[in-house]
Image (cartoon, rainbow, N blue to C red; front, side, top):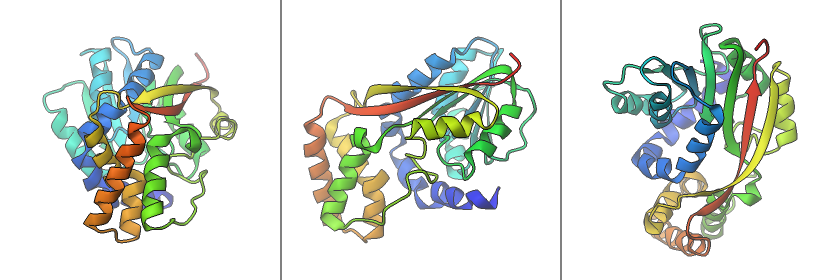
Length: 278
């Protein structure tokens, strides 16, 4: 594991893994439309070899595996051991899905193996984005396609901004983060990100989409999960929030989400990169 990404490994394996695993079913349901958009754009075909970067607990791998069939295969790559432990359990008995604990930025992947690379919110955490995509490109077949969803502009994503504002109003404002640093919004600036990926030798484009998240998720459940994870959960941890704080934050998130219901609007950047030689 690259020392430069040791912080990301600790974050996803130690600091937040328990919270995400506890609520993973709700998070998967909330982001279902994003995953479907990625898989549709990737145009997975029977027999394709697929690399899923930042696969988390592997639900995206299972969906991809259904599309490529038994003659195809999906390799899920993630930096978090707890996530992959869950993924292995979910994929038990599936012969066309495998998982690997590694950092995609410098993982020694088999050269020229994959027809497709897919990622739902898994590629925004590299310490060196260009180096990471150069490494991933070496694992792709000529003309292979990479399709990756990331968050767009923060102001257009109330999924993050509402819990952040509610928790900050209650407990205090955390230190300002560099949005270009590894994290959820590292790919929000499309021009900047296109340049980083193109520098790896890829033909890359982006489509900015407006999607609606969590349309099928109960508002009470959604508010509880949003209070416990993401920016609200981080602020609770930073300021040692109490159960009373959590209850107040959850109630206010519910009120503000409710004004947007059904679902939560989101701006998603869908990046597509084509490897040379096809």
